[in-house]
Each structure stands twice: as C-alpha cells, then as structure tokens.
Image: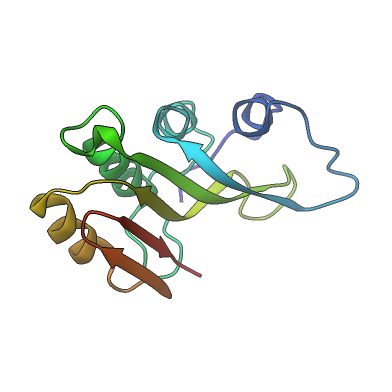
Length: 138
C-alpha cells in the first residue's frame, strides 16, 4: 500500500469544503468528474495500487475514465463519473477510495468490451449499449 496524503485540500477537491472529522469517519460522494479523479490520484490522495474488493486498481479505474470520458471519442458526448468515499485522516486505510464508475451516454463497441472485461466482477454491474454503464465494488 502506497502512503496517501490526508490534508484538507482533498476535501476541497471532492466536496468544495472541509469536513469536520470529529463527527464522522467517512463521507460518501457521487458524480466525481474524470479530471478531479486524476488530480486526486496525481496529488497522492488516492493510492494508485489500491483496490476495492475485486476491482481493478485505482490507477486502472481512473485511466478507464480518461479513455472513455468527456474528452474521448465518441464517449465525449456522455458523462463519466466516479463514486465512493473520503476517509478520515486517522482512518487506518486513509485517503480516498473509488468503489465504482458511472457512464451515461452513447458508447462504442470498444467501450462496451472494455467495460465488461474490467468490471464484470463488480457486486453491482449494469451495461446497456448506447445508454449507460455502472459498476460498484464492495
């Protein structure tokens, strides 16, 4: 496990404000954009080698978002986002965990094949060509 940074800037990036860690040990998020996921990974707020259950690594999940997110073709017409939680600075796992991805919009054959290959072991897996893909790992 790679050590991760837990300074308050990570909360600003995800939520736009700081979290009072005296009242909770984790805060869930949805709709995290691709660019923010990459920024969190590059700033060491996310362990690139970490996994969530049978998920690909965090690095692999963010790379998938970049390949098929808003800057990709033809998926750029859709919306790609990540979901999960930010853990308290004193939590043993620390950092930020991505449990899943969501994509809404048109898809290519490559997207469908890669989404199915990477995320088929998810606890929750939905894929409808030209509509959406969603996966969640526990």
